Length: 52
Image (cartoon, rainbow, N blue to C red; front, side, top):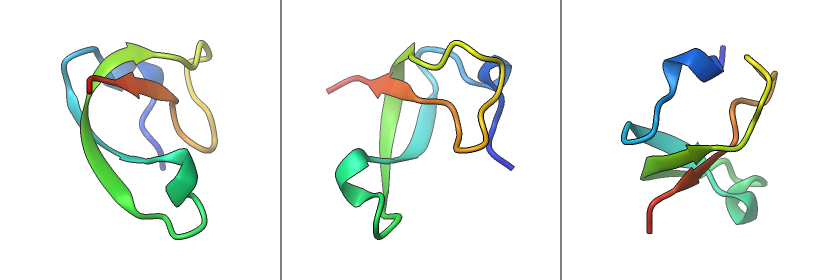
């Protein structure tokens, strides 16, 4: 089950699937800069923006 919005905060390190990696499901580690999903949960996970 994907995490809820309340479980993710800016500055937390997360494993994400980038858009170009969706067919393979390859994970990339990043630090959350902002939460982009406004709802408390989403069946595909919470969309985030990461620091570069």
